[in-house]
Amino acid sequence: MNSLNNTINGINNSIDGINNAIYGINNAIYGINNAIYGINNAIYGINNAIYGINNAIYGINNAIYGINNAIYGINDSIFGIVKAKNDINNAICDIVKAKNDINNAIHGINNAIYGINSAICGIKSSICGIINAPSKCHGINNAFSCIDNAINGIGGIRNAINGIDGIRNAINGIDGIRNAINGIDGIRNSINGIDGIDGIRNAINGINGIDGIRNAINGIDGIINAINS
Image 1 (cartoon, rainbow, N blue to C red):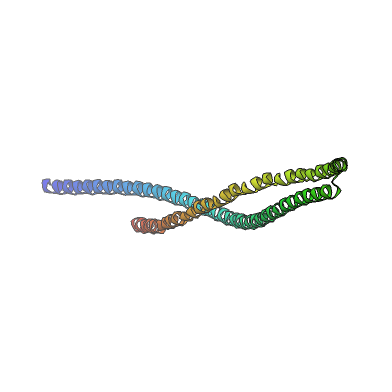
Image 2: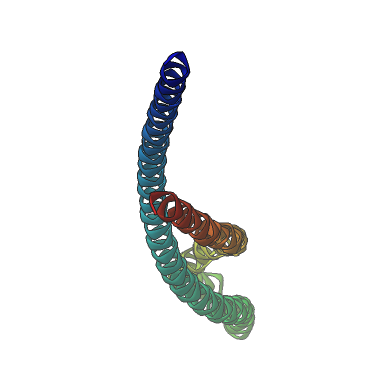
């Protein structure tokens, strides 16, 4: 009888051990399920992060597209400025040629005035020498004084022509315009520096390594499926 009781007690103890083991297994499964839940939450967070990164890449690509369009517009503007610079340089050449023509004309007028004055002096001396009468020479001198005054009026023309120097000075000021235009080269060099955007673009393309992260996450799904099975 004692032997039977001992056997029954041993069986009960074994059953208790089995129940305890099953309880431990259930606790372990509960822990695994909690771990899987945590992994799923982590995957959800990673997917949200990837979604945010993709949105950021999309925004960066749009920004690069806008920058490229801006560079295209700036290059068009520079082309227009360079064309305007060439047109201004051509106009400057025409102005310089006109300035030289004006100077030549002034030189010719001065020579003509000098010749007229010399001719009047010669005529006056010749007439007085022929008449040889002081009273008549006095009248002739008065008459020639009027001519002299008229000729001296040419001095006003000369002064007006000399005013062309003001035009000449203004024309010379075009050098300032030319220097300013040449400064456009500095703008062009600065704009060309924007081409460093390619480096930004390449760096952004490197973010496409996210596919590797995504693949790794997909691998976790396989682990979870294996555990659930």
